[in-house]
Image (cartoon, rainbow, N blue to C red; front, side):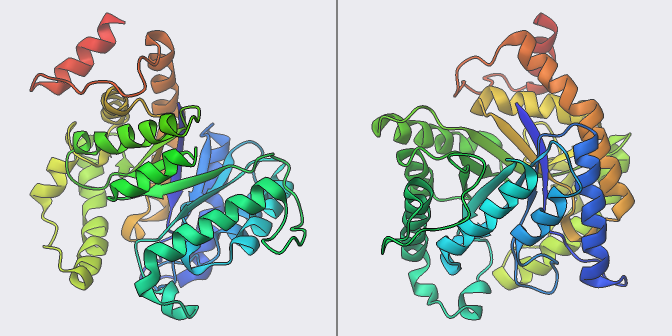
Length: 355
């Protein structure tokens, strides 16, 4: 399994804003590369509380400061962008990085880019489908619709393109039918409820005669030496960010009780010790059989030192143990049945001891 991190580069109140946040982000990607993580993702937003509006520019800077780690957007809001330009930008990142670039396309969780670039929000779905088709056409042929060459060409052939999916089953089917890997965001609720998305993705690929495409599970998290420290240190920042966004969307306020519950084995968030995170990744692997796992540590402007420590623990303690367990026990079926018994912690622990 590939293990990595992604960030929306949340800015921190009372500091130097976007300039400081981008300097810190470069330290984060350098450390992720140093500790052996597989992939680093940067999201696109057009709001004052996030520092990155052009992931390819940031990833190009990261390419010059890293050696091995793969570099992806997380996500590129394709509906309000030019697919030809997106391909050129990430081909350039691919060349600068020696073949480590990826594009993760999605429709975005915010809508600010639509009026900013003059698009009609009523065409939210149609724009994405149309532009994804053109992006794939450019990747396959090297030409625009009108037959003009699109340059430069990337090192990788084909340049990897992932589709990010939130809560829309049709999006999972479409990614599968196109033979594209899918990044499934799970940031709330019980992960077992998302199992149908993985199944739809796999079945879509089968129906279109594609090989089973890769699946990534993307979630929120924070890692510290003790579970209490992880919860205490991260909650004020996560709650502040989620409640701010919740006021825009009508969500109820995040409670500490709910946050702690989401950090349990069957919850959505990976907040706790390295051992907690290992157990939870393995538990979810039994549900999804996924090929990649990515965590977002930077929600709400969590202090930089804590983010660096989480990255270090993920790379030096969590990732090696997960890989060891999966190698020892094999990957099993791609979509495994979830645990039937209620005591899932004991189920996972027993499963690991049996190996």
